[in-house]
Structure formats: C-alpha cells, structure tokens
Image (cartoon, rainbow, N blue to C red; front, top):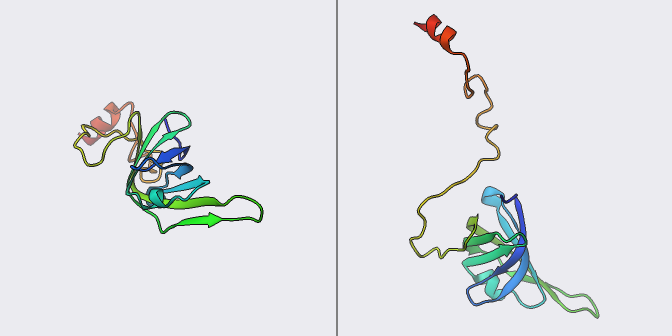
Length: 137
C-alpha cells in the first residue's frame, strides 16, 4: 500500500525520464522532478508514467506544469527541475493508457474518515440493540 509520498523514476511518452517525488495531497498533488538535462518534454507531457522505488506503477493524467527551471552553480553542471500538477493520479500494479477503456473497477481507501464521521453515536455499531428496539416499539 502506498503512502502520501512516492519516490521513483518518471517518464514521458517520448522516453525522457527523471527522478522525482510524487506527493499525493488531493487537489494539491504535485510531482517534483530532478534531472541533469532539460526537462522540457516531461514538463509539457499531459500523460506521465512512473515506477516507485518499491515497484508500484504510477500513472499521472492531464498533467500541467508552469515550466521547467535550471539551477547553475559556478564550476558545476546545471541541474534541472520541474513541478508538475496532475489532475489524476493512479497507483497500482500496472500502468494504463488513459485513452483506452480498460478500467473495470476502482478500489480506494479513505485515511481520514474520522473527519466526516466524527460522531461515534451516529456512525458506529450497536452491539446489543434488543433493549433499544423494545423501547422504541
């Protein structure tokens, strides 16, 4: 099972790849990429796939990036980085092509269910209900 941050290698459809960290935070999800060469094709790609260091497959769909940036220090090679904002992120055992009709089911887990369901009296289990049912009837 994945956590909120996924470290791995990510690539665009043209084969350009870079190391990056995907932070899953709902509408604030961001992929931060780092590489020794220009990241223009990755920062312009709308569909990015990746593999985490644990072997999980990541598919990012409808990605947007303001631009790729470069850092240069004296007597050192340039380093490139880009922040990419995907509209959809899927983590699983395989990559998928967002243009194909392959999805048969979706399974997800909620990690913050206590926020909407904080009232244990309203959203809980009642083990011995006979006395309450008798009182209501």
